[in-house]
Amino acid sequence: MSDAELSTLACIRIKDLRLRTYVGIKEEEINNRQDVIINIVLHYDADAAIRLNEIDTALNYRTITKNVIAHVENGRFALLERMTHEVLAIAMEPAAVIKAQVEIDKPFALRYSDSVSISLQGQRS
Image (cartoon, rainbow, N blue to C red; front, top):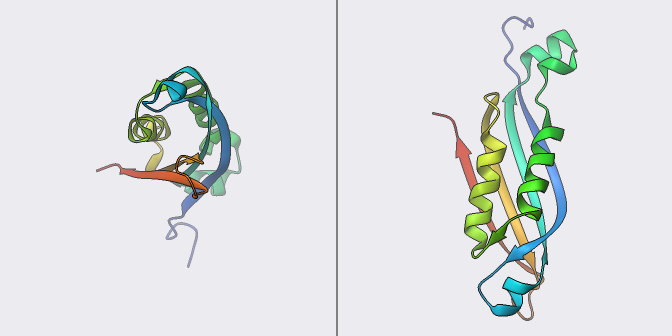
């Protein structure tokens, strides 16, 4: 199969991004930052990046990550669902992103549990 016939869908995984933010509805959660762990999966067509081997043709996951960090660390969220939705929107901002998934863990949200997480997925139509 020639390169002209091959379409390559890349999968970039941003793993275990550890941030601190305000998330929750209890007074202690509203007044104190808590740890969250964010995992993001980005899918994009990597044909140009593979063919040309130039940074400008690849998806800039560093910029996406910096935007997520700024948004989460400067935000206040009542619900983990809302934070996950907003991070997914940031992940989907670049037109090159075809599909994205975001999972956010809130460690020790429940007694006897390591964490609680919410996962959302978005896709261009």
